[in-house]
Image 1: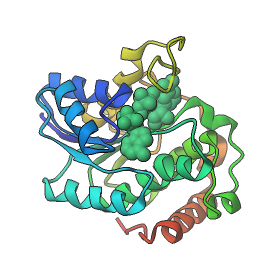
Image 2 (image 1 turned 90 degrees about the horizontal axis):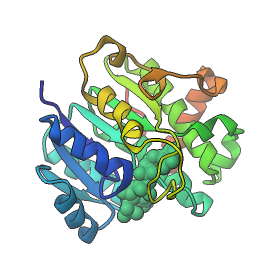
Image 3 (image 1 turned 30 degrees about the horizontal axis):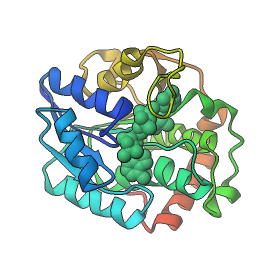
Image 4 (image 1 turned 180 degrees about the horizontal axis):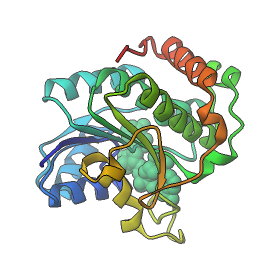
Length: 243
Ligand SMILES: NC(=O)c1ccc[n+]([C@@H]2O[C@H](COP(=O)([O-])OP(=O)(O)OC[C@H]3O[C@@H](n4cnc5c(N)ncnc54)[C@H](OP(=O)(O)O)[C@@H]3O)[C@@H](O)[C@H]2O)c1
């Protein structure tokens, strides 16, 4: 069955590859890029995409605008929360990697939500006081995506929300020497977003290369999940909706 999928950060890297693979499989894909110029490049790089929406995810007002534009374009079956930054100031890392996916999760409803996390999340020392002061390391920001997937899975039983570690792959972020396979790095996101396979129709799981994998145990802490949602709601002005 053809699905309609929004892929954030799809002008390059894993997001662009996911978009291309989805289109090749017959799905309807809406791209997202940081600027009109990047959106044009994304449309040229992923022929067959329905549209490319524009928002700089480091600016929360633009993230809210992206949600409005996405909803105005029609309903989505899945959202792949792929956009991310690695080397950037702590506030930008937090906003792009954690707060933007949180806001889009709240405002763009879809049956399947895929959060592109990282194996590095397992080294995080989550500290909600740092979160509250709008700071996060890359590892923390990716831990929060696993925590968000867990919280969504628990609060919204009708939604499949899962996190993915794509491996260390040779994109702009991963660098040319990254050892893992790029195609393998995108397969799981596409599968979780669209497959009828029972193993893909699960929620609150963390995947690496199509298999459930061990993750930071604190992601299971329900009190931490709730406190995280409350801090995100305060920082963004967007409350987490009921199911
Ligand atoms: N590569 C790896 O080894 C690796 C490992 C673990 C996890 N990941 C995760 O995988 C995801 C994809 O990364 P990648 O390797 O494909 O990196 P990438 O090639 O650098 O692509 C990142 C994407 O996010 C977009 N983006 C970044 N900041 C943005 C902003 N402020 N507003 C809008 N879009 C923004 C980029 O847009 P521009 O192209 O315009 O900058 C690009 O499309 C990320 O979440 C990353 O953390 C990657």
